[in-house]
Structure formats: C-alpha cells, structure tokens
Image (cartoon, rainbow over all chains, first blue to last red):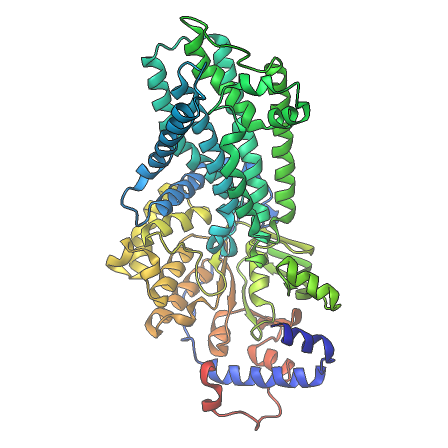
Length: 340
Length: 262
C-alpha cells in the first residue's frame, strides 16, 4: 500500500488519459448494464402527495434528547444488544452473575482470610459486594459504551439515527445486568437487619446520580473516540483491571484516611475519583446502615469528613462532563460513517 | 409544487489515511510523506427536487453517487453547504440494508422499521405485507447471516418500500436479485412513484432509468455535470452524449477481458 501511495504522489496525474479511460469504462458499463434491470412502465394516473412537514436537515442533531424521544427504538436496540451478547451461549444471562460471584468469592477468601483485611470491618461481605456491584455497573457501561458504536457499524453506516442511542443502550444493558445484583444485596441487608436512615437514602441517591452521569459521560466520549482509534477499548479494559483496588471495598475507607496525612496528594487523587465517591456513598447506604444499627464497632473514620459537599460538587462536575461529552460527540459524529 | 429535497453547494470531503499506528506515522514524517490525503467525494453540488419527482442518478463507480445518497438520507453531514428534506425518508444505501447479522429476519425487520420511523403498531400492521413481498418464508426466524445475498436484498427492499416514505432512495440495491424479483421491485417503485413519492434511483441500466425517471442527474468525480428534466428535453441519451461517452467506439474490449464486470 505504501508503494502505491508513493507512486501516486510522485507522478503527475494525466487528466486526459484518465478521462479517456473513464469514458471507455463508462461505455463498457453502459453496454453491459443497459438491460440489467427489467423495464416496467408506469400505469394509472399520477397522484399528488401532500407532505405535511417542514424542510429540515435530514441528519439528526438532537443528541441525547432525541434518543429519549424515541423510547421504542431505544427498547429495540437494548433488546438487540442483549440478544447479541447471549447469542450462542449456553448460560446466557447467568454469565452476568457468574463473574461477580466468582470475583466476590476470590476477594473474600484472599482479602478476608489471607490478608485479614476484614479486621475491624463488620459485615465485610456486604462491604465487599457493594463495591463489586458499583464497579461492575461502571465497568460494563464504560466498556460496553466504548465498543457500542464500532460494534454496530453495519447500522451506523447505512441508517440515519441519533448515534447516542448506542452508548445509552449500553448504559441500560449494564443496568439490566446490575439490578438483580442490587436486589441480592438488598435481600442480604434485610436479613442482616437493615436500618435505613434518611441520610443513608440521600447517600444512595447521590451515589447513583454520580455513578450514572460519570459512566454515561465516559461512555459517550469513549464511544466516539473508539471509532477513530480502537486503542481506547484496550485502555478502558486496562483501567478497569485495577479499578477494584481504587475504591474502598476490599479495605475500609478508614485505612485510606489513616494515610492521608502522609500522602496528601495521593489521597486527593484517590478521593477525586467519582467511582470511589460513589462507592463510599453506597457504603453509607447499604453497609453502614447495618453497622450503625446495633452497635458501632468500627475503629477510625468510615467516611471522608467532606463527603456531602464533595459529592454534590462531583455530581456538578459529572453533569458538565456529560455536556462536554455530548458536544464532542456531536462534533465528530459526522465523520463516523467514513471512518468505519 | 413544493420542494422535497433542497441541496445547496454541498461538498463532502473524505480523508484517506495512510498511516494508522504511531510507528507508521513517525516513519512517514521522517520520510516527509503525506500523513493523509483528502479528496472531494461530492463537490459543490446544488439542485432542487420537487415532491413527486423521480430522479435517476447516473455515473461511474466512485463518482459520488452513494455519498450523495448518504447525505440526503442523513447518514452523513455535508462539510459545506446545506441539505434540507421534507418528510420521511426510506431507502437502501450502498447495496444492502443495515442489518445485523446475528439477529433474525424478524428482529431486523422491526429494528429497521423503527429506525425509518415506523411505530410498533405500524410495523405489526404491515408485517404480513412485508414478509409476503420479500418472499423468504420460513427463513424469517433465521439469523440474516445465513441468508443468501438475494434474500438479504429482498428483505431490505421490502421493508424500505413499505415504510410509506415521502422520499425513497434506491441505490443499486437490486443488482443481486433475480429477474422476477427485480421486475416486482420496479413495479412496486412505479406504484409509489404514481402515489407521488419522490424517488432517487441509482442505476446503470439505461432502459430502466428511462422508464422510471422524470429527470436525470449525472455525477462525474464528485461534480454534477448533467441535470435535465425529461419535460425540458433531458434524456438518458442526452446524459450519455453529454459525457461524450458515445463517440469514439471501436476500442471496446471483448467480454472475456471484462470478466468481473459482466
């Protein structure tokens, strides 16, 4: 291919010869194709069609809003992605439980029994599983969203639709897989004697909002980037491999807080991660509500002192990120079909 | 008459990328080779199409026909100029529908219909007609990756033609079908033409363009070089003559040399 490029740039193009060649090709084509389609003459009277619509640009410009205006199409895309995932799979949907269950088992044994990280963490299993659920949702949304447009290229190249559909559909698919895990978590919490306070509910809501907006913004942004450079889906995978260690699930937040005086910068980086904040807020919702109830037996701090202020600011930042991701997406969207 | 499609000074530029990895880019920069080259697939094209007009689009391979249809369909956006359309657009672009290979014909039917703007109720209402027209019978519940190319095109065409669109785009889709099906499709297209649908028909088959179209547009390496309505003296022959493709005969290669073209 490189040799061909070199030739093309070195030699001047002979316009006359090119035209002659094109003419010869055209003559040949006309001769061969003249009767390739059957001729059917029109019959009956010609009607006039009144179109009750405005002249508008045909390409979609509505962005995320347009996606939610077409719930039926969104539903079809989601069910299609689910069907695609479980095509030729024996376990089907069960796969989305096997993986978190295995992860939970391994972490529980290694972190709990070998590294003894559950020292001072009552209900360690719930503490761990809360983190696994949150990170699972985040990873699936981000990873699935990043691949979503590229893997639907057959549609993107040939049909007109708001392309934000695909990252949004990945968010819903991820939610579809995560919700049953949340139910399992709730059932265990209820068995263990869940004692909800309004503060805990507020933390749960704030944690959900941060998680969804942050994952959505990343999904949208990386979906567009991945069309141009497939490196990004590998980058996402790489980051997701150590995401479990960057959130307080195998270890309590208290250990992070203990280190914050010695390594203030590392602490700031750690706590700036919206996923870590989301996990902390979910710990408050699920895990701390259990601990809080009968007897406080946790040593040290369970949550950062500025959890609420920080959480609200992070949510604001995430909303800005969604807006920026949408702007970026709209800007480069026009180039998707030609880059596939 | 109301305008159905308004194309104004539309230009679409494509980037040809030579080097994809960082290493290749570094090597190319060191050798002072161009990193990328651009070319205009559609170059400053303007025209208006009235509602109900049926336009034949002709031109060699690579002259920008499919790109122009993609721009009208809304799959791509023009880099310069503007395109406005009125009403619902349906059609088939670049030989074949946007199907997903792992989904069955039935699922693809619903999905494609939804993308072209049909509601669930509308799709269900037209379902039998679409299946009957496509004539693929029991293969409806088979993944479309197992379809023959003819079946693929038949289902795609059948969905698009039943959308009841205001603008219908047909881009060489029928090249793979067999002759009886082609005839059926042309008859159906004549039918929607008589109902006042705006039609864009890309074909090399002169006789069929003559029968189907009120107007012929010719693209030549991105430029629109011929545009004439039949009522204003335009004809397929005129388009061919305009291109001067009809003189200097004699140096035609024989069919054996053409091979793939036949």
